[in-house]
Figure 1: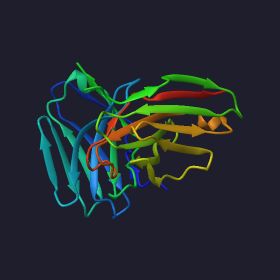
Figure 2: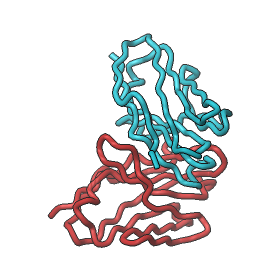
Figure 3: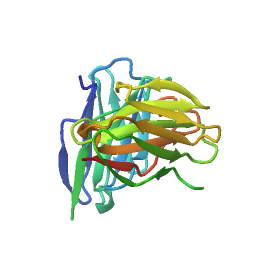
Length: 112
Length: 115
């Protein structure tokens, strides 16, 4: 049973446009959500996070939106740049020492 | 400051053998977590250690084990290797652990291939 789902395995966006990556979760006990970015042959790199008490968090070009009633979060990247081409993972946590539950990732391709 | 160091980077083992992977966290970080990444299952939580104690374990068989030393370095061991254990094993270091709330820094991983 996949508790965190990223339904788009890949997404292609033109440079300069907005990239929107989506993530759905099923476990209402999750209270913290994170996005990681991963390049081939490297470990994931933390991008941005959001607590369940908020509905939006911004950091430069990156904004994460959380809709708790729909159990949905999204990552917006504006404007998209070539260096943003990578695999993006959505992750969720129940706190404590449970570890993170990851989605399977979305491969974002920024086209020139 | 130095990042998270995982050794070795690549490893090829035969079915039935055992393997030990090593992780040195960022200096001052007391928590180390391990994750397995496969194409089919994605990233899955193996276990978390804090101050030499295992605080939690994911849904993996007992063939997967780990430990943490007093200097916070951690090792994970997989015994009786199976073909399905072929994966990228990632170590994540954090100050206090706790499901990534306090910030995880991942290493580059150890790519294990079982033949």
